Image 1 (cartoon, one colour):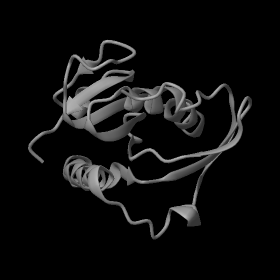
Image 2 (tube, rainbow, N blue to C red):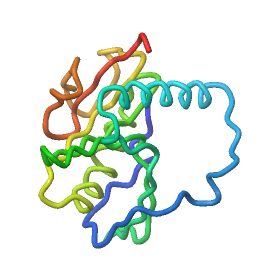
Image 3 (cartoon, one colour):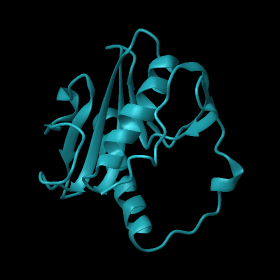
Image 4 (tube, rainbow, N blue to C red):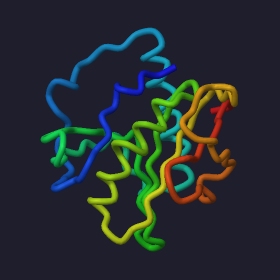
Length: 163
């Protein structure tokens, strides 16, 4: 179970912009569960690119200023930006369904992405390999089988075991 205090909720976003990847994140070597999670994230990326092509933005970094917490950074795993429909979908990848994904999507990414894309509908979805309904979760998740049918808000979960 994730630590609820791990992700500080944003208050009011006063400024935000896409930035270059911070130097401290380069050349990191990952092993074990972290490496397995990154490999799953990469497979999800291939899946998303097959479905949405150049609408997929992978591993973007965003610098922003939050009224309560000051200067901060975040990096959603994927954004699917459909300019024609006016919809941005935030995708957070996890090996196992976890409340951390919900907290990241709803408390961190949603306010920032809404600031960056004014007037767009913003959706969030956790894509996980292992889904257990009994896991502690802040809300009852909406289980979706098709990314295009994700609901408004950040309560969507999709299990992709076979990628």
